Image 1 (cartoon, rainbow, N blue to C red):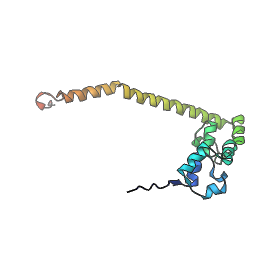
Image 2 (image 1 turned 45 degrees about the vertical axis):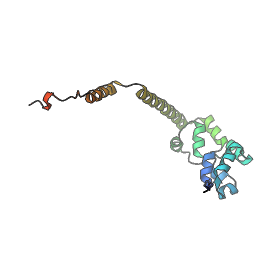
Image 3 (image 1 turned 60 degrees about the vertical axis):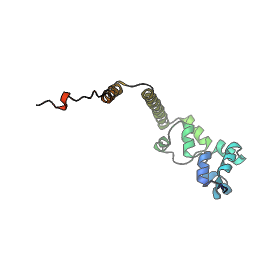
Length: 159
């Protein structure tokens, strides 16, 4: 028996998302066809002129705009940005530095700090134990050794 490997394809919208470009700004032949994984890999490793130009000047999709501004996609929406922006528009926003952008950047900094704190906390849990975990672990070890918390004879104290 021979195994026949089928070619995996994706919709243009998926390919555009993976390439970090705004679908409506891509050439018609890209928008109308399907893209195989091999074609996507080729576009990523050796991008054609149209892809380089789109990445350089835009218009950029919201995830790219948010990343370039240093904020979240939700922050873009809170700031009233719902449409794709060009690199020139993004640079103008950076230069203008409106209040909402300042707030969103501060929020993003706090979110990143919290993410780091949670990762460190999880790492501590993996490597060591906290006081509560130590108590729980001792109780589990005692139970395994037959030293449960029951009273001798298995009776409860009377009230």
